[in-house]
Image (tube, rainbow, N blue to C red; front, side):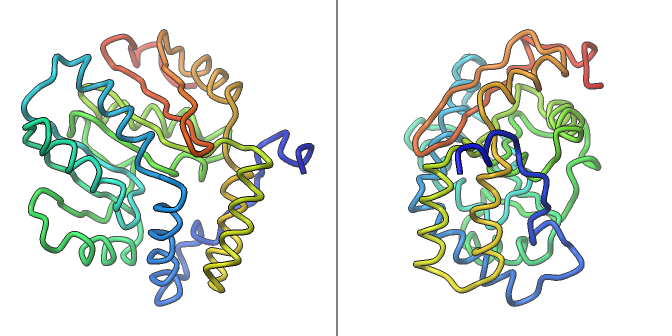
Amino acid sequence: MPNRLRYRAEAAELMDDFSVGGDELREALRQLRILNRIFALPGPTLYGVKRLWEHANKPTSLSILDIGAGSGEVNRKLLDWADKQGISLTVMLVDVTKEACEEARLVFQQEPRIQIKQGNLFALSEGCADIVTGTQFLHHFSDEELPDAVASMLRTARLGIVINDIHRHWMAWSAVWLVTRIISTNRYILNDGPLSVAKGFRAEDWERLGERLGLKAMRCKWRPLFRYAVVIDKENNSLEQGAE
C-alpha cells in the first residue's frame, strides 16, 4: 500500500460525475457528515481562518466563502468560534451540485448567517469574500488543474485562502477504508472515501504547487487527523507572479 500511495491517484471520484446524483448522492452527503465528525474535519479549516483573522488585526466582521462546501457542516465550528470572539460572521456555501445545496439548506435552515448558492469556482466574482475556504475540495483536481483552482480561490478572496485537505498516507487510507465499510453500503462512500485519500497530498505536493504559482509565502501545517491546513495570505503574495 505505501508504494501505491507514492503519487496522487488520477481516477475520478464518483461524486465528480455530475450527470448522476439523486437520492443516492443525498444519502452519501448525510453519511459524509458522520465521517467528517469521526475524522475531526473542521479543525484545520478553523486553524487557518484564525491565522488569517489574526494577521488582519482581528476584524469584528468577517465574510467566508466555502467552495465545494457539500453540506457545509464544517462551518458550525466557525460560527461557534465567531460567537466566542464577538465576530459578526457571514458564510456563503457554494457547491456545484443541487443535492449538496439542498442538504446544506436542511442543515442550516435555522441559521441566518449561512447563505447557500449553487455555483462553480471559476465563475465567482473577484474579491467577493474576505476568506475563501476549500475543505476536501482541491484533491478533486489533477496536478495540472491545481494551479488554476488555487489562483481562482485567491482572486475571489480579499484576505486569503484556507485549504483543508487529506494527507496521502497508508494509515489514513486504511482507517477510511475500514470506517466507511462499518458505517455504509453507499457506493459513493465506499468508492470515494479511500480514493479521496489516494488523491490527497504530501508536503512536497504543496511545495511544488507554491512554486508553480510563484507564491512567496504559503503556510502548510500538518493537523490531526492526517490533514493539511494550507494558509495563503494575499498580503504576502501577488497573483501577478501567478499560475501557469
